[in-house]
Length: 226
Ligand SMILES: *Cc1c(COP(=O)(O)O)cnc(C)c1O
Image (cartoon, rainbow, N blue to C red; front, side, top):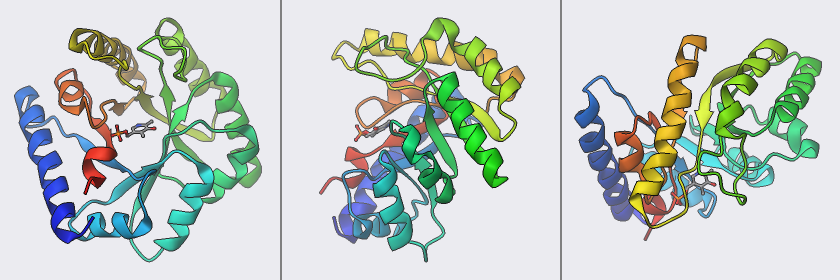
């Protein structure tokens, strides 16, 4: 990816996001996270140079490598992958802006405990398995609000900012839309409790996700393509 393709890719995403969000409201702001898990630090820098600031990784070691290689740039880093307990301390030390993939009360409490020991706080999202797929992590939609409340009540060192979900992995747009609607409904219930982000939508479905109310999209392949 060179400067020309980085510009084209980012402009394309921004144009589509604008189209989708303005259909909801001019006040509906959508944050774009560039998921860089299959990309190099050099490519991240190309996108930074044309204006992208927020990036996400799904492995703690890859995040560490990229945070270190790009430490001169004022980037915002998100973690979106499965978090193993033995990697929690490493992740905390990288100071991510947002951990989007907290997928159980137990994991939230484990992270909170380690944060207390370090006298630090971090922002998180609760991941919800709105597509009901065995291959996906996340709490079930039926218990999401309850678990969210339990995290708020028991984890003083977590700033709980909302929910994240991955759309159904199918061709049928109706089924994908249903999974997004499920996530949005949960998010709406959590707004009175301080939820700010409804993170849903990836390269193949972010316009649909925005139409369903997403205010944070995570785009990898379409942003980093050659
Ligand atoms: C990889 C990944 C993305 C980006 O996927 P693309 O289809 O490449 O846009 C978004 N969210 C999560 C959690 C991911 O792991």
